[in-house]
Image (cartoon, rainbow, N blue to C red; front, side, top):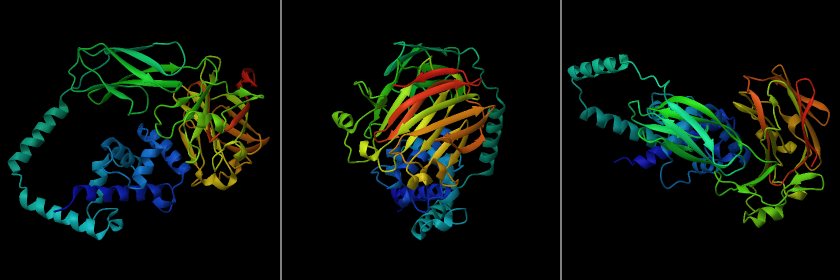
Length: 431
């Protein structure tokens, strides 16, 4: 008798292989840390689901005792263009369908066995089929509910800072409700079930940003409201490889000698090992003092991510400009790792796997001056005075809400300056 777990595991292996081909990485074994980080971003943007890098690694290495959660498999299948995991399985389990050539003979035999067995057991009379079709037509033409009168609002328990609890006030008592949820942002993992006859739900926010909380009734997105989690000044964070949902907040002052920097010694003080070579340090400034139009601004900064001062192997640094409905970001690294780079402007992604991003490779052991200029939805990126990228912004992100730096290992910032579309200085930090 076929083993369902083994069959599903082989299907997952095929799914991984197809994603590897889509990402232009020859085999699943060739994936590096940055490849998983890029995939995490791409899946989030396409499906609204954030699959942690550690989860992706476990799936790629087939290191799971139980099958991954259905939402995880749905997200991976959706990334490939399938409706969900069931749709992927349906399209790939038959040797006559696409993808079957890559499937092992043992698995093809299993599916043929199942197909023949089911054919012998299942017989549906035509009259039953007719009744089912009529019922489907009746329910399909039945008018849906209008949720315009649903109430949904929020209030923070503290005015600024993280962690921050947000109380959601809602009223959905007028509606027929099979299921209802409040989702705190794009991340489906941060979703809480709510009761039709209750009025309040609370949610914990661990990261600053301009989040769009969602009210979902009967699988339908009903309303979105902004939840603006700000910082008093610069927030210094260590991404915890063990728990990526809850970060480590650095309590010590990280501004010294005209720069902001978290040292390897500080990382170790928080019981995070350096030997895994996959920890990140991050800096957030999400505040009303940092504002502007994401279609017309200039941002200038200077960064360094030196191996002698705690950088991880590829010396990555990502600079993100947060806005109301997304972010712009650029990434720099050691020249040998540029194939793993990615950029994002509005909704447009540029991947190093199928674009020449060699100009974003830099000597990260030295200070590098970066300039991001967006004017009338056209973007220009300069590195140390030389223009290295020009392109279009695909869809506006709205008003600017903050800035975020993420370093592979321990990196430093020397200064940060934001100008509006008329070259007026809006924000300046020289540490």
